[in-house]
Amino acid sequence: MAIRLALVGLGRLGYEHAKNIHYRIPGAELTAICSVRQEELDRVAQEMSPPVVTQSFNELLDRGGFEALVIATSSETHAELICAAVKRGVRHVYTEKPIGMSIAELERIREVIAAHPGITFQVGYNHRFDADLIEAQRRIGAGELGKLVLIRLASRDQRWVEENLVSFSPTSGGLVADMMSHDYDTARWLTGAEAVHIFGFGGVFAFPGLKAVNDMDNAVILMEFTGGVMVQIEASRSSPYGYHAPIEVFGTEGCIRIGENSFKDRTAVLDQQGVKRACTESFFAYWEDTYRAELNDFVACVGEGRSPKVGLEDGWKAVEWAFTAAEAVRSKRVLEYTPTYPGIA
Ligand SMILES: NC(=O)c1ccc[n+]([C@@H]2O[C@H](COP(=O)([O-])OP(=O)(O)OC[C@H]3O[C@@H](n4cnc5c(N)ncnc54)[C@H](O)[C@@H]3O)[C@@H](O)[C@H]2O)c1
Image (cartoon, rainbow, N blue to C red; front, side, top):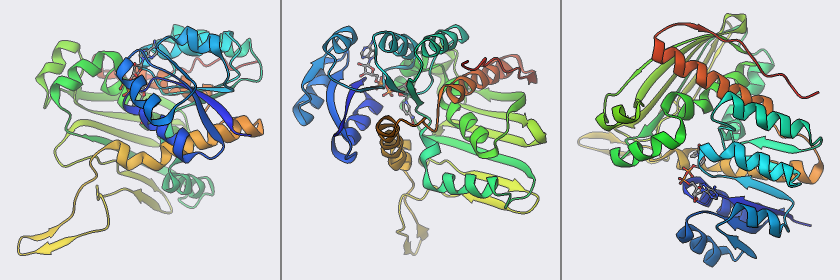
């Protein structure tokens, strides 16, 4: 029997999740949707006809009729919705990253999950579901690269519309804490190592309006991981050519590179001006398969009673590293990272 899913948040990402659940995940059924924006509810209701359609999260919980909840609301609501759902008896929760916006929120989530043993809790670090990265992680784990020396990751968003970025920024946590959190998680997962020192720089290069909301449009973070592995993470909101997310892992016995170029497809046009290739337009297009794969795995975890690949500890550490990185950039100091995750007894 299909696992019945409720989905809260139907914006940029929530709509992708709705389509994946409804059309592309055979073992799942979209039975309830919730969004505070009526026009988003109308669009999904007309297209997919879930039985429960509501603007109120409390009503969603009251009506029930689902086994698992997918949270894709704006970041500042995640902790509250996770805690409310688990306290009301929801046993399986997938949440978009970040899990919380403060250490106090992380602690509240941990306490609620610890008080309800057996909860399936998955965090939306979807890059871990990319087939090339999974293969790279296998090779690294098998020792094929020898001793790891350096890992470089970049995430360059195709140039945002400034007005959209300035209104989105305050709800997100900002470039260093929010957008780069995928890369902290990917670096930690690929290397199997933990952060020791964190440093970074950033600035406003393309969108002056970001200064008013205390954010930046380009930044680079340098980290030292356990075992001495050097990590460089770069992020941009102003790529002039398209979305680009190259990754390189360099070791004493070899090197892996993924996504070196931002090619949209396999077509090259050769003419008198030279060779032309289109660039990937958006992160959605680049990571599209991973959004389906992560929810597919979440549904399988619920069905099979197994633990998700990206859980509370991963979500906690990504947020904590993100806060430390943001503080390092702000203060222009090298910070030592002291983990606080207490685990669940
Ligand atoms: N994994 C990724 O690659 C990725 C990409 C984009 C966004 N995200 C994350 O996804 C989340 C959503 O981002 P987005 O860009 O889709 O945002 P968005 O602003 O487009 O959508 C937010 C949605 O949340 C709903 N909402 C907000 N508060 C609510 C509440 N209390 N009850 C019910 N609905 C509520 C809004 O109605 C809207 O549907 C963010 O946390 C973001 O960090 C992740």
